[in-house]
Image 1 (cartoon, rainbow, N blue to C red):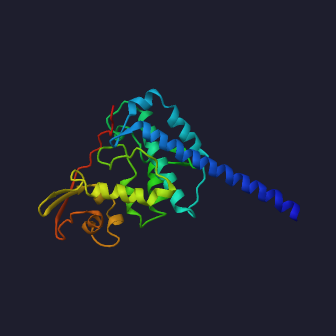
Image 2 (cartoon, helix red, strand yellow):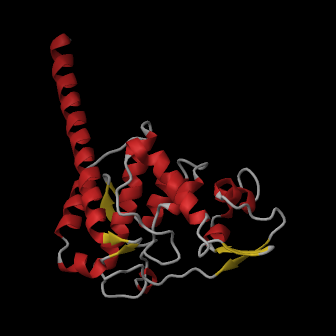
Image 3 (cartoon, rainbow, N blue to C red):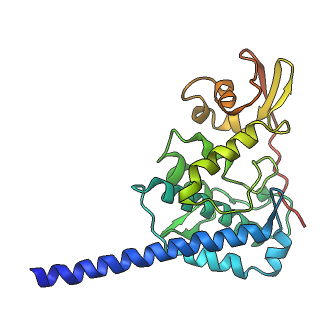
Length: 238
């Protein structure tokens, strides 16, 4: 019995070591990619189209990675980065274009091989992240859909060790941005994002309550709230 168990444990240890190495490489290469190709919240799509090697490398690594919800920060960081990378990949595969919506099924039909799965972008967002962590509304400020209406993409990877502070920082930045939360006395215009995912933001009160949790200047409690149209123009920089 012992002779059987020892080789099994060795194989299990080896597999876990390989997975850990792949994850470390994935986060490192993702970080390098974002640093090289994201400027002021926008993406250098033309440059990536001309030289997609670094993107292809990190996505190839991502194909074989397996993450478990038991390590929530590792799981979330992997899938957030994977989503943002796959959005960029989807854009350059159809570049040039003016909006991700120019591509039929961009979010809900096109499947990607990632994390040992064949899955759409909506599948990553709704099934692997929102459904598994329903109380984490901050996902909406780090998953970047390639439209200008999305919160800006950052030029670093999301990493397990710093994920909570990164989620917090991006949420605070978005909800204090006067171009994202538009205040005129008692009238407040907010993104359609808050309408589409209302249930995520109203788990502990109103949408205004959620926004005020992260704002330096509080919105009026009885503010008249309306939604401005989502800008699907491509978040591109040259």
